[in-house]
Length: 232
Image 1 (spheres, helix red, strand yellow):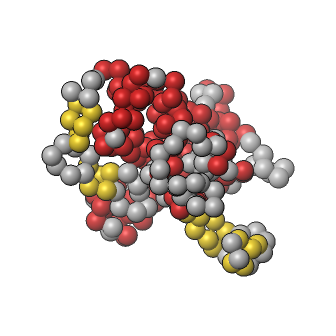
Image 2 (cartoon, helix red, strand yellow):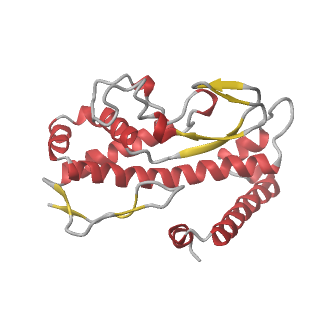
């Protein structure tokens, strides 16, 4: 079963099998890079193979986890973000026209739209020490789910959190994570999405919803599984 079909069907065994298969592709890539020796391309995988963490090389499990997350982040969250941006602009003609008239606002508008509708819903983490968050004590070694989508609508941080505004402090936006968990590809993601919206608005005069309603992606995905739009 293809990955998208498995996710839509919420077929957990199929999703797990696809994840194992994908990990196998990455492990084969590690083997190929090592066997290539000096003939290996100077790419990110080669740099990771030579990295040392706490004075030791990373294990294959750690390398697979890194490369899997970077690959999935580039493919799924960017595609989700593209759909979310297009849907919002189609549903909000004044914002669409504002960005068409002043493309310099597109970067900030993209971040604000994706704050409102997160392309990445959550991450799972394990606490390294006891911590209190919002009056809730979490012990060391506990598994937690960090809901980025909820944090980016926190009324204690964002006035009128459901409102699209371009005057918000970008430092408050957790779209690309924070601290040691900040997305290393955030500059590339912002560039890709900015150029996407620039080119879309430059090539059409109007983007409107189609008569067919979109269908939302299933958790843990975000965005839309289908998004019919009309480009004029």
